[in-house]
Figure (cartoon, rainbow, N blue to C red):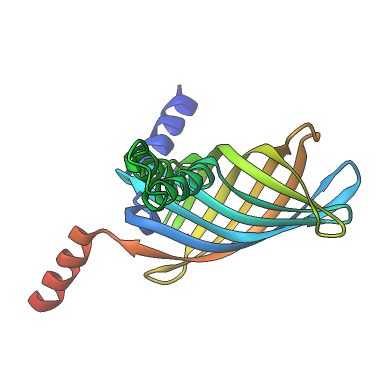
Length: 216
């Protein structure tokens, strides 16, 4: 019974914590990671952005370059890739002088596609300034090039992992993560990485901070 109440108290304590990182609206970071796939070492470097909803759930967007001995890949979200193509098609419809074609679908559809994320995350405070966030990236695409930098094909890509973040300044944080990744028919890989990023606070919080400074 004591163990039960101890566990319950711990859960209540965790839920009552508010790590400052998840009170922000946007998280933007640069990242670098390494991993193994079939005894082949690869390196990933890129940018990651999250839009937080109600301080818990995040919409994840990734732009990565993945390099190994055999291939080089550029990773992006399906939404951004498809959206860019639709917008391009919409602009072509404007300039082709054909009254039968309309740019509305391409332009509007492309803009809608641009907001589709690579994946989702869930943020949970685990201590003062500490945050843990499992994530699942399900809507990614890899543009694969060979060792001579010649384009080969396009692959569906997904990844699952957990990120640990520490806010060491009001708007700066470290991030460490471990993830497993799959690209096309390739087997699952395992990698670890780190990142450095910044946050953009809620508008309401910024107003509140200004009010508190004036009061003090």
